[in-house]
Image 1 (cartoon, one colour):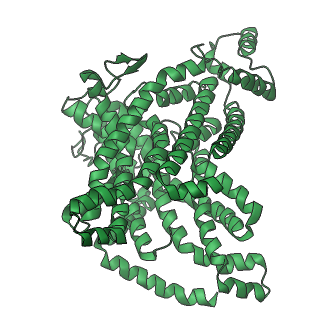
Image 2 (cartoon, chains in turn green, brown):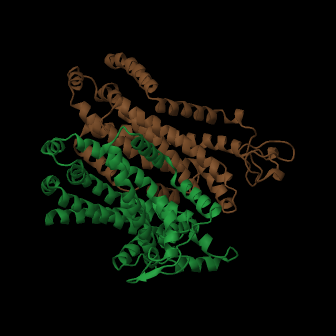
Image 3 (tube, helix red, strand yellow):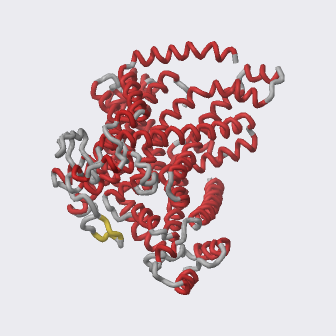
Length: 325
Length: 295
């Protein structure tokens, strides 16, 4: 098991290294940030001075080398536009994104599991068909457009919820969170719902498929024959078995929720990492773009590792295969 | 090959019959056909050419849907801030969105198919290397990969097609490869090898036709995905250039007027996008059931 973890970590390090080189080379091919950062009236000498100050006059491999050396010291370069370390900027924005993503996941799970179970247990009822039609809609709705429509209905027409921002935050263990204040919750609701929609549809379909498959298994028939109540069959036997793939998907999808938060954050002006990325792309703030991508890659590698480990812990059959592979 | 020819027509009529049985899928197919036709013939059926400045009347700007302008023209879906008829803009936008979605899907399908066939037929280290790349790529969300690519490449129709192909090819490669692996072990392939056919002939005339049904299903769903992704990227300002106003750009354009209650500039292009994607997904869903591939 420990050997397996070590191998996974070594693999992850390799992926990270390859991604950093790719991202660095790619991002550093984007335009010339000097054109945007410096006053257009600046003369040649001033441009040269700024280029040198930012280290942009050096050849690309050398820039990459400096970057890697600094990266090991936890320093991923300074933002061109605000002159603070890029990592600080990202870490400062990260709690907002994670809070949003977690809330979206909670909404998706709390609604998706029961709806999917219902649709799986009674597949021929009108309710089940409505749920499934709804899930196709959830798959098809362009997330950013739903966000706009939510703003239109709840902010412009009804005036119930604020369209943008994070609202009042509370400091918990050094991290600013919104969900503990009424104002924060009011700000959080729409973006979280918006982000949850796609995953909700996914979870409904996944739970339904799992339930339908489990209900015809021998252990369910046996439990019925034993006289176990339908309620207990669903809660204990079926749910336990379908939860394994669902937990995996929830884990893996968490990374994609963070990525897709880019759109939601932009619409609702939610001050998270995704909005930071878009803003940075618009002003060609390369260090922030590179740092964001590396932080995301680290998060993904970490999430994948945790999911794999959780999977082996949950399912003994996988443990055997995983240990041998 | 003669076997494939004999089977194809029956499959086709079976498919037609299955659409006739499923009313929802049939409805979706009809809607999809109407949308495609509307997009193809948008210059002929649009009330105006929305990008011919001579036809725009600035006095008619931001008119709500269904209202009449001063000179008696009716704008069914309203106008934008330049007095552009939204219905015409949506029809032209549909054409661009669908075009980009279909072109990128065809390119990604071709690329993924070639790579997947190579991996499935060759096996060994070729397969291992290709599948590693596929796995790595699929472990990152499409929107992230596309965003980074567009940030690097810049704006443009060709750039967004490159980005969409890059995020999509891996799905086809994986599908084709897994099917090719199964087909490869079947007896007709052994027979073909015994007959001394060249590998390319076996791959393209024997294995490929048998991998097509699942590929078609994946491609249908991926067209919808590509269209949605393009719209999102365009909305974020990193997709289509302003000279090719896709539905996503129209929605982005209307965004600034949303808070003042002028919903129609964002609402209707989004509705067109939604109906298109739902129709494609429903048809794709039905195709999956009908062709019942091992996905």
